[in-house]
Length: 407
Image 1 (tube, rainbow, N blue to C red):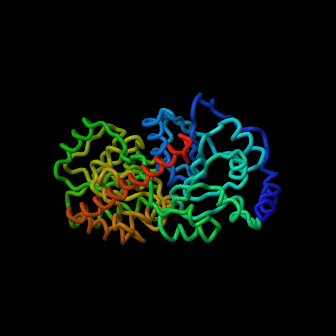
Image 2 (image 1 turned 45 degrees about the vertical axis):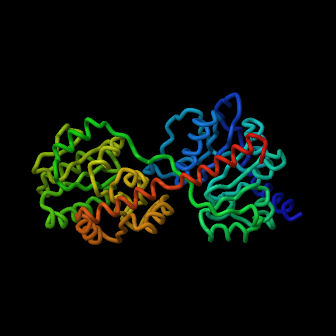
Image 3 (image 1 turned 180 degrees about the vertical axis):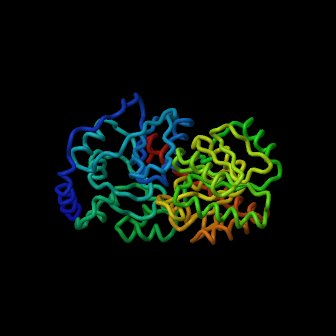
């Protein structure tokens, strides 16, 4: 009764969202699993799960995920992958839920983190579609669906066969919200799709020979407002390591040329500009690059990475697991942007160095110039970037049971 009342109020409140039918990709023939990633941070986890379903079981996967949340600086890997179809999530109305499920006809639905879409979940339950939650943090309705819907959360959570949470506080949150205790299990985090970005090995080897034993650090996706802080930190660190070189990749590629000219002409730095095909010479103090496609190269060359946007900008502009996966120690500011959970994991593992100001950044950089400290931080970060394989295996087993008609 409570579910019926809450769902009725929820659906009435969402009538304004109904509009023209969205464009949908062609549905492939055969079996289909639906995965839903409500945010950027769980997208890589679901991509890894999708890859295994296709590679090991030959099952097509529909992955719904929102766009970049209006943050152009956030890089999201949505390149075409075999067996994987990307689509925006359906509007959570009764009409769209019916149209979406009728069109895609998935055999199972897996939701990450704990975002509950009541209209979709209720319609899926009516069709006896098996559902589960993985990587659960806490149950919540979509952010644009705030309101009072009596008994709705308590009514929809029992419709999930399995709720796998990341830790005990998350499990308590689901049980308190109405999930049956026997359906809630603490498993930890799932394995993530590799964040190790590629590079041309010949290019890496050539630059590594050029740099030799010089210490190097990287400022990745650097916004203009943080340039002064980064240069000040570099100047302070040069007092301890006079051969230190800074690689800057501006957040806006068009900033590369004017930044290089300012540093050289107005501040007297020895600068090389990648886009002008200039190579770093022994006297080069700052190397300015402007290609976002070469981050795999820079992370491999720089033992230390500062993630731009996290100190004074709008939030971190690169996924911190990118440098972590390639053994680069991470420094970041107090503005994580959409990667708060990831930075929380790195912080708990003592796998990244947090700073609160430009002065702190210089001090942290100087501290990490010690190779043993850099290595410890990088190793811990790599461990965070590569865990969760056992949890993914468990999810795969549960999915296979459903597909085989056993669960």
